Image 1 (cartoon, helix red, strand yellow):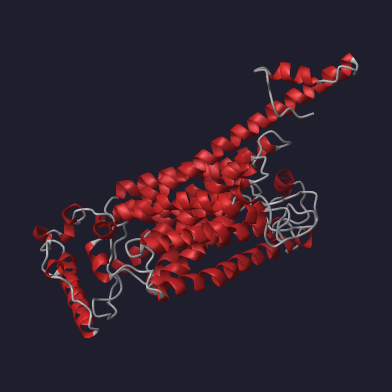
Image 2 (tube, one colour; image 1 turned 90 degrees about the vertical axis):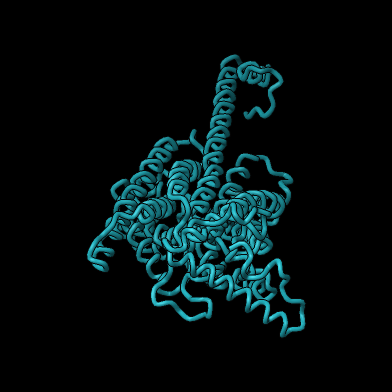
Length: 525
């Protein structure tokens, strides 16, 4: 017996009124107790999802603060607006078609497999609205991963198009394949892949690998920021120029908000707190999340110290390395936080911190400009977190979380079937994202809608897109009185002048109207 409407404020009175008056007194009492238990359980689960959804959505503030702190002052408004638009576009895209593609018509008793959902568009026929709210927050998180990677050089229109495309179609298909009971990779399907399926408890592959691989494609096609790896003539620099963020405090605030929000991200993926063993599952998830983040922060900090000492003769304790190391550990813990033991979470986090730093150094060598290191944090450790499940998944933990343990981690006595399923999920996500997002960003680039103009990039996107006064967005190194203290400050001035001269010459040669006198190279620098 389930009571869905209460005319009386008391659950007891509503359940008493719904009991069969023709039944015996004992049967009526038993029915009332079941009704009260179910009503309270539904209320507790709904509140649990409200709590978890709120924490996951709070991560948007963490991403915004982290991105704002990592960019130059002249691009802060642009960076934060893109984070806000991620939430707005994700809400509309996931409401209209995204949820239907991901979870439309899901039925845990139906053995049929589908590539994509075909029901519940615009939330029609959806009973559990809190489930939509929780999944929307996940979709928004996946989209926001890309915001920092493209910082300081991406057009607003391109970002809007990307955000809608990812949350409306690309991400939902991945979520459907791995999390829906009708997904061909789902461990919760009636007949899972090879009897095991893919275990991705909170989204190492679904959320982080999807967002991180999209970020890699987008930043590669977009190209690096002006002056980062090449001079104004396009000649490679002997040493990459660092573009330090304007606020370490905002970066640290963003990292702590993200860590805090991750407790909702991972624990909320249990979806219920009232079922059998759910209290143990949620408790384990919270502990593993903490241990993985802490371990990764330490390993990343000391590996960076060691590498700097070998390179320069003197090491340093990098806040940026430690901070992103913690985030890498959180990403790495996401896939298996409910199915591994705490000691395994420490190992997963330790490896995540190392893999983050190695990937970050590799991207610099390849001249791929990731302004916030989102690719090594999310893509690399999305892969590692998914793979680690196939190594460390524990039999009793899988039984508690998924109700079956047909295979476990290789290091825990498994036969390798689970590991193979995890590898297939990694390849599927990478292939799916590449097949859609490479043509998508290539088309935007071909249309001239991807990258901002050179002049706008050097002057600052806040000045170009958001109407900020130029003197409000000038960094210290761009201030005339500070040129002598920061050698690249004069380089900014020279770069801007050369770019404007080139644009004027190009416009004259093409027969177009050259830049006006108000936009000459000597204005306001």
